[in-house]
Amino acid sequence: MNRNRISDHLEQVDLIAKLADLKNAHYQNSLLVSALIELLVEKEIITAQDIASMSAQLDASFSPTPHPADPTL
Image (cartoon, rainbow, N blue to C red; front, side, top):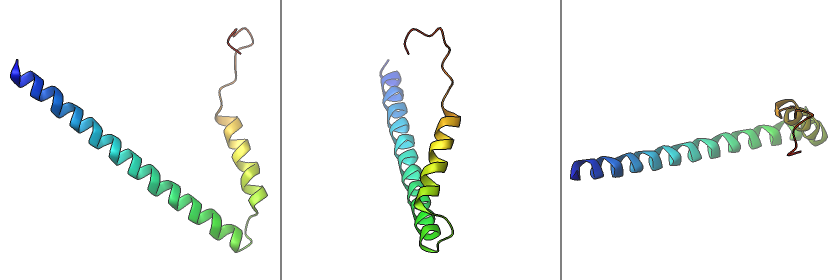
């Protein structure tokens, strides 16, 4: 019984560590994307409007199409 409680606690610690790793990876990816966007705009390769437009297009393409009979919409 006691060993099971320790195991449960260790699993929770492991899950928390994995979550921290994911948060760090997300931060690093966000930082990289921000730097790339700033450089592309600064070098006049792309405009901020181009970025906003493409972001909207990608967001729309990844959003699920609602079913017309869905009462929650």
